Image (cartoon, helix red, strand yellow):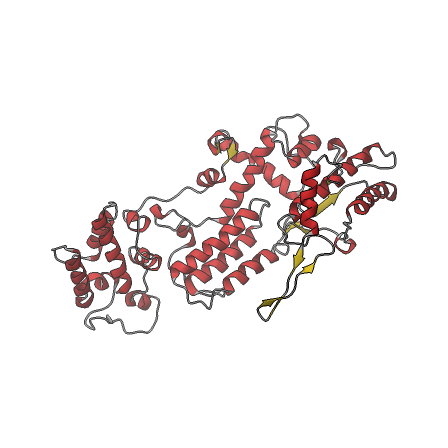
Amino acid sequence: MLSELGFPVKFVNWVMQCLYSVSYSIMINGCPTKPIPAKKGLRQGDPISPYLFSLGMEYLSRCLPALADNPEFSYHPRCKKLDLTHMMFADDLLMFSRADESAVKPLFDAFTKFSLASGLEANLHKSEGSFPFRYLGVPLTTRKLSFTYCKHLIDRTVARIKSWTSKFLSYAGRLQLVKSVRFGIQLYWCQIFVMPKKVMKEIQRICRCFLWSDTDAKSRKASVSWEQLCFPKSCGGWNLKDLTVWNKAAVLKHCWALALKQDRLWVRWIHAYYIQHRDFWTIPIPNGLTWSSRKIWHNREVFLQANGVDQFVQAGKFRIQKMYKFLHPFGVQVGWKRLICNSHASPKSTFIVWLAVQNKLATKDRLISWHLNIDGTCGLCQLESESLDHLFFSCSYSKEIWRQVLIHLGVTRAVLPWQEEVQIAAKRSRSKKKKACKYSIAFIESVYCI
């Protein structure tokens, strides 16, 4: 096969030497056995295996187009304009023909010819089924993507969360895990489908419960709203992504691709069967589109409201982040943003200070306001009622702690009320000088320890 494809003899010999010299050893009690020669060439996981597989598929790709000359073969009704007989991605193969025996037989004969030449055979148990079915890890369906179809995605999110619920992570650790979980979801699923809002809300609920309660079950009241968590750090948030808005921004990339007739098979297919040389921006939404395609078409109004697509394109590519910023305007910048954005302190300490500057710590006065029956006396000085302003730094105990830290930093001044200390620390954190960095770190870590 390599020779027929035109590869040099020397290269073919190199490849065949890789096949002939393969051997395996099994570890038994920490010691490898004698090498076992591989009688049938490569195995899954061998570095050269994907390349040879692609070469094998090239033979199949040359066999299938020849079906056009077979009078018994008939194209699928939605594939003839593009002469489309098959699509391949890695080891997944989709073949298309008219659904009758006379058309399927030539298709099967071409695949049988490939099987005899390569030794690769189709697994018929994996080749039969009905919609919806899984392809490349996601469900394919002609109908609206339902909550049931996305159950696998939710289960994966729950499993990922549950695997960490017993690790006793800090707020910062749980926040980082939430970011990684949501990041994986938005990069794959949200760029392919118009996701049901119910699914997005359920994933958000799971992540919110885990962040504030270290569990995937129903959580107590969140200290800060999820909307604020989605703001940038400069606006008082943690730059989480609003999945619903991100999904819409990602789907608009498909809308942009349709308008510009990019050289992609699915774009050429829609132009061939639905747009047909008309203007994408003005034609009515065609009949016969799938639910997701109609949703993409509806979203073209966003570009019209934004006066075109140019502001979302950079270096010839559509930037989802630019569209996300357009659809999800950020809040007002906060005065203490540098304290969080430029923090060189530990993440867990920075998160606690972030709560403190917004008066969201669970101090005793707040717990009492939530109708909890507790003693409101400060647990450090045992003299006054505990509140944020008392704890930082009206309390004699915490005041002495911060006074000693200031002395260690070489700062000779009296300890000021909380809001003034925050302003000083925020101002110091703007500088990149070593002394200023030490001050902001000391302030954040002191607040965390108190």
